[in-house]
Image (tube, rainbow, N blue to C red; front, side):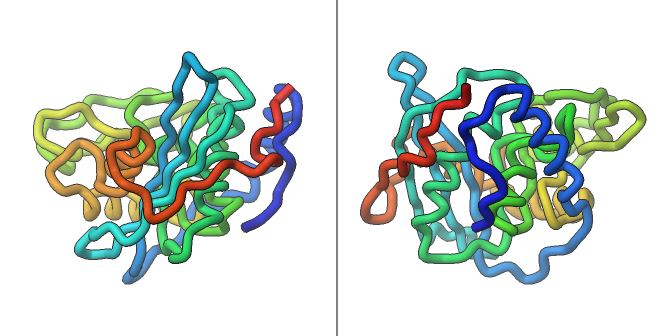
Length: 237
């Protein structure tokens, strides 16, 4: 797991870090015959300032759960649009550190390059993990798009400042689209394909759907949970 930077930085520096890291993101690549696909998410207890990061590893193609890891800790930053990765990455990375299996692909409940500085949570995690990642967000952060057709698999490009940054994808007939973007080491077309392959009748693909359940305490972890290490609790000043 790469150590690209520390987390105890100011907000202006965080934005500069994002701009620098965006240049390191790979927007191409294919994932062939993966054995393990992971999903990550986080659940926040707003009244307590505490959160749980979750990673769920599934065996493909059955999408059978093989490992669930959780990490608990304090959040060092309030929600600031565009800086979600500095708020959520530390706990997610702490959970990933405890994995015994090695995911070939990670689906992230958040944006990849569909971000004002092209450095959302999925891209940030992809660089730290040095693993192909896909942003699979439930809402749009930036850019505009046409309304995709109602049928499952229909899509519309999300465009920001003349650049295609993602796809609004209908994963189930008649439900709201999800927003797919490159995280790292994968092409947009491949990212869309893998999200559809991981859908099992729900709006969300199984990896992030199950990670959401795990973070909320509705999917049992594998053996022990862990507390975030001190470095992962540093406050963003």
